[in-house]
Amino acid sequence: MTRNPAPVPFATSAEATSPEHQKLPIATAFAYGFQHVLTMYGGIIAPPLIIGSAAGVKGPDLALLITCCLFIGGLATLLQTLGVKWFGSQLPLVQGTSFASVATLLAIINGGGGLPAIFGAVMTASLIGLVIAPFFARIIHFFPPVVTGVVITTIGLSLVPVAAGWSLGGNAKAPTYGDPANIGLTALTLVIIMLLSKLGSGMVSRLSILLSIVIGTVIAAVLGKADFSQVFNGPIFAFPQPFHFGLPTFEPAGIISMVIVVLVILTETTADILAVGEVTGAKVDSKRIANGLRADMLSSAISPVFNGFTQSAFAQNVGLVAVTGIKSRFAVAAGGVVLMLLGLLPVLGRIVAAVPMPVLGGAGIVLFGTVAASGIRTLSKVDYKDSMNLIIVATSIAFGLVPVVSPTFYSKFPTWVQVIFDSGISSAALMAVLLNILFNVIKRGNPKGSPSVFAAAPTRMIPLVVLDALEDGDRIENGKIFDKDGNEVHVSASGGAHDH
Image 1: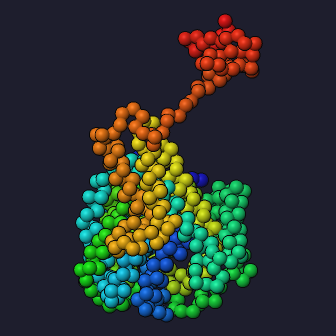
Image 2: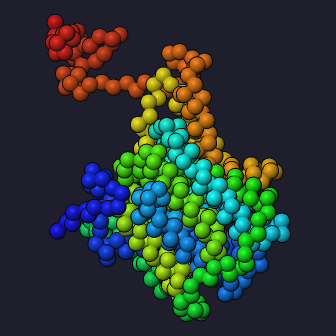
Image 3: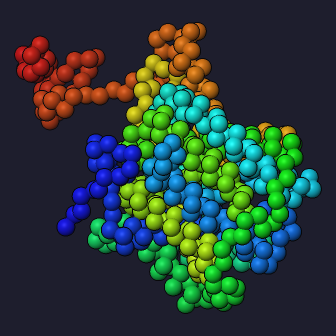
């Protein structure tokens, strides 16, 4: 029996019937929520691993740094999905430590500031971001389908190298990195997803990602490709101790750099909110975007208290929403609870960490490809006739893929340039917005008629009724129709064809 969606906070009766507001049975919600956690787990633990190692943090302290990021990611996800007044988009968005901040945080460490300087910069820049978040929400009209389609497509394409890295083994320094056995495990996981999607029931099909990860892990364990030896090596329960690594310090240079990062995060989160709105069919307006951005920035400002870093929406989970068709924000909220438990129970985190990266790679290929496909679907709604939209799409996607296919492209540029443009998502978003303003908002100076070689020719279509009127042997010569005997077939004004 299908349960009717229950009323939710801050939702009108019309909004309560929207897919993202649908209530799910608790067991079902947690099954889908756990699937979301598995999808983004590798991404959420990578930044603290990288930053902690660079700061010289080792052993139990490094494990604590990771669990702190899981805990604050869970809190941020609950705020984003459930929402309170003025905070939270109430959309199925998973929050976690942002990759966009890693390069700048490493630069702060290399400058001698250490983790306290990082926490001070994150806290200050996030509070600034909290103040300017409503301004970002007001520029929603600069994100028509030609822009959102580009951004969503680029999100998917830019995440493909992540799936490839997982498929190769995840750790480029490991001797087994790139082993054909790793790629074989990825292929096996991919096959399992396809079989479960095609042959399973509706429930099995929606859980195909989670089930394939579980089955793939079991197979990997049998083949000796999964290591569970570290599961019980450490405490079972541990609460994140506030300011464990020292009170924050505030260095102007680090704060300025982090403000630039926050602007990038605001851009990416806006794109993710628009993307998940497109996938779920939810109404996304400036108010909803502002609430989502405020939740992002508040979470980021509080995060350093619990030894965490900047928080942002995870693009890969947008793909999971599209693949499973489960659009309820309560499923993602359940994932937030799971993240908090992983942050409080390191032993559970170590179990999830034992999932082989090639297995996650198989799931990632489907998920990230689905995000790109959603963007292409959005771009199919764009009017390319007698406009410059084709050059906007072409240039923006190519510009966004530059740092993806050539990661060192901006390596000789100043740090602030690298922070902005090393992200394919923010690069594509900025280029698409600017070109849309240039060609579609400021129309003065645009060529009339067919603007240029970049203006797509209109698609030719022949009505089906015309084809039905044709008979075997009919042919067209010089704009006239002839039957198989060479007699001209005239077309009447009423639309019916007849021999004369």
